[in-house]
Image 1 (cartoon, helix red, strand yellow):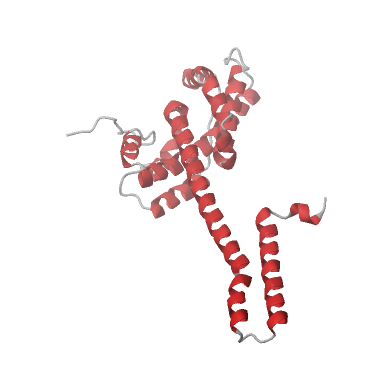
Image 2 (image 1 turned 90 degrees about the horizontal axis):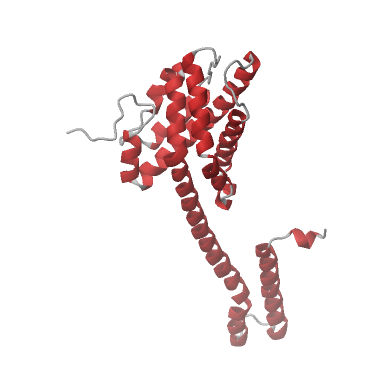
Length: 256
């Protein structure tokens, strides 16, 4: 492949216009010799036209690019919001209700309307340092019920998850794409086991690892989504706070 084929159209256009401007300037100088002549001064404006065109094109292209980026980000956040409405919030609630270690991180995730950017940054730091552990033996009714109900829930939403994974806008959101991939993998793992009772210890440990993978990314995406709602959609943020899976006193109903 030639070097020229690797250059973007912006670089190629810039080189052409700058070269054109230089050629015009040199031609004017050699034609009139005296830069103080009136015709030279008039012609110099023509020589700088290509540079003005370059500047205008880059500014307009940048503005259009930023607008397209904002539109794409808005579409991605709509998809993320749909995910949490249909699957994410419920899945997060199920895991937090089962995991006794949730209490160790709960205080860092009690989001409210008074939070600042620093609070969200602190919360992200806390969840990144959190030691995710999830013990699943399958030999007690609690863990077995958790696995069975989670399997049923994810299998019921399998088509919905597949639809999200086909959304081209998510290619620009690596973390959320990883989350969807992890959730879909967990769905396949659970669905592939017709009977979740009497599995081997290693198999239960494997399922626990798949759930932890989902859990860690899910919390991160949830806190980022909460910040997005707080900054852009206060009414949606209000409902999300009242449904906070980490707040044992959370209630959709507003007390008097």
